[in-house]
Length: 292
Image 1 (cartoon, rainbow, N blue to C red):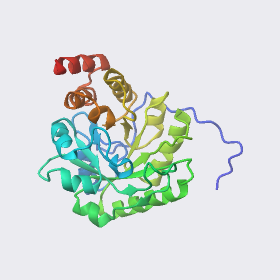
Image 2: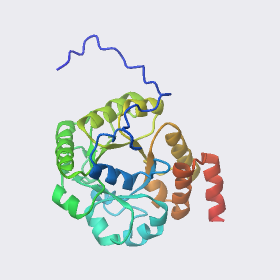
Image 3: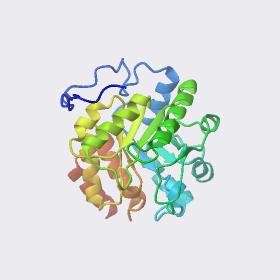
Image 4: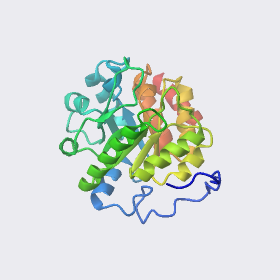
């Protein structure tokens, strides 16, 4: 193990310089991957904008019935036209999503304790690679707890999913978890996203923070920003805009879409920021026009 004494604090992120090793493929860090991996990533990230709008509805795996997601069979079809990638559990996908849809699939493959248990950091790999293949998953999502009590088992879960994914050309999405005792700073997110990327994931989901462009520059795979807790619509659009401006290659909005009183219109407004380079003010005007 490298001696930590004398290590210098990183500072040279060269945020103004584009990633230097794309190898002719538009998804960051994927130039040396095989055809199958690239095809799955191309399903997730739009070839024109290079970005993605994910819709997360996997909350039920630890929260049970969630406000806004009581009827997945009704919610998901309304939002389907406005998103690029569905992020859910195999149970929700198989029961509530029609298989004739053309959207990418981010399959939640890790699972753990419910909200009744204060410590959510001890998860297991709940879906094996064979079922991920049967589900035609475009990536497998693994919750990863860096700095939490369950960090070691979490990294073991991630490693096993990455190894299986590499055997069958299915990307792994490392989801950086933030527990109640973890700091939400650029220092933490630089650490967590880099660890997850160096383990071998093909994309990372994390949160927006100050100095976000440095987090992006230091991570050699695409970052998708999580929407997090429910915000007023105008604030959620500002979060989306700042994330894309900071270098994120997409948004994975859950509660900020399905808990909005105008969820379809909110998804459309997010899409304008992610794919059409709208500012947050333009997207807010678009949203207001759409609901009136």
